[in-house]
Image 1 (cartoon, rainbow, N blue to C red):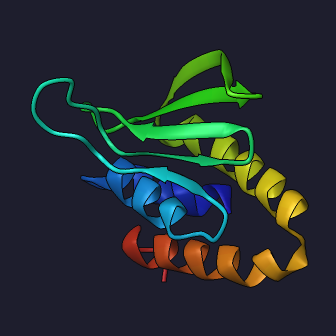
Image 2: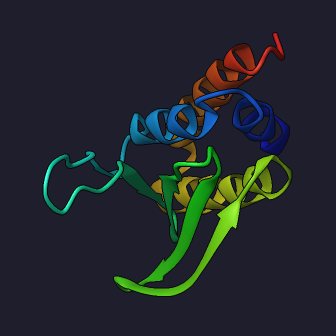
Length: 117
């Protein structure tokens, strides 16, 4: 799972792809991008992690507990996969085993986009 995310992050536009794929998961809290004054990129919260694509192609990850950001970090292909895998594990634990098929399909999509298939 982590290697699929890392492979996608290594591609141009990979951070946007990862956020878009995570946004499609049932139960994920997706926030669309806002343009104009007070513009902000799209973001998605899965488990206790809010993930946002950064302009340089990396992922911004914020650890959110009870609506409060307690840590932030910028993730490239080396660390992004493990952080997203952790968030997905929390998401599956919170929503039950029915979520496993959705996560498997998402990872297959990321593998295909990253050239892993």
